Image (tube, rainbow, N blue to C red; front, top):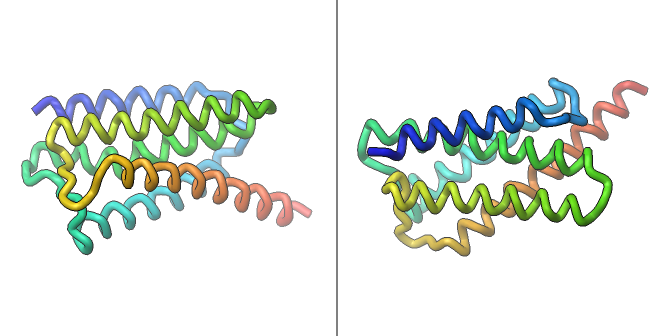
Length: 156
């Protein structure tokens, strides 16, 4: 039963890290990236759980908000943190370090949620989950590039 309080604590930490981070993107650009990533993560996790039945979410109604917080808040905020940190740093070493750090956080939180029985892998494993998390990060970086391109083009 520690799953929900721990997920709330992670959500608060991720939000505070993002809130006090130096941001390159404006509020509207960050909001667009956040909304698109929320839609993508919600669809992917819903398809994996309900349609393909590769992952099973908890049946406990007290733990289900942990699934919602992870899917709708933690993943998109970590992606926003990566996007802003990626574009404020100029060296490849720092960019790689940020990517590995956020990738490790995503996989660690997912492993912790599996340990606390919020998620159960049926026909899924940690390697496939890591690939999906890596895809989320690359998709977030791509969406950020598109948003910047559109905002620069619309200002001209």
